[in-house]
Image 1 (cartoon, rainbow, N blue to C red):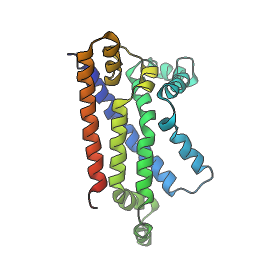
Image 2: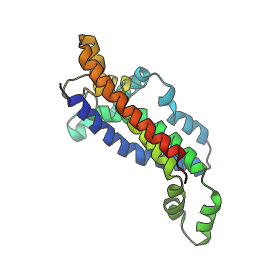
Image 3: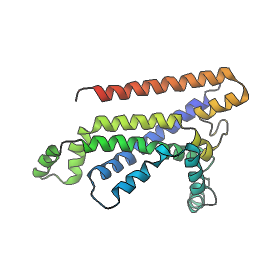
Length: 218
């Protein structure tokens, strides 16, 4: 049994989780606390990966990051390697697909923090960034962690966008969901079933963890 797809999926998901945890939390704070024109449009645009078909999302990323695009050419000139059909492409695709799950959960958690606590911190002379780091984010931590956990699960299970951007190269860009598809296409039902069970087990563990975060007393 070749476990390379599992290890690749775990590596990609771990990197994606770090990226999304930082960008998703920052974006959530901006949307929850910021007051600026177009905030609703920005939130809707950031949430598009949830409603777009994965293949459509992958197509947009392929056009945006391909070797003919400005971003793709600049990246290849700087690193000597393209973004598409590489592990980098898998990370980018999974990050974009997972981002809104963290963003929306974290935004709801941050918006629910009682402003009296934040105001009390301000009256003590704390600058806004310290209020965010010492009051707002710790109080919203449960929702933020739940969002990050969901983002990890989404990255682990991403198929359409990753297949479009990173391809299906065994030993290089073949993640677990793609390996399941590949096994089914090859008629290897045993391997497909085993990989599917492993992915399902991870999903159950993640959902149980999120459920505990949602019901635990603060």
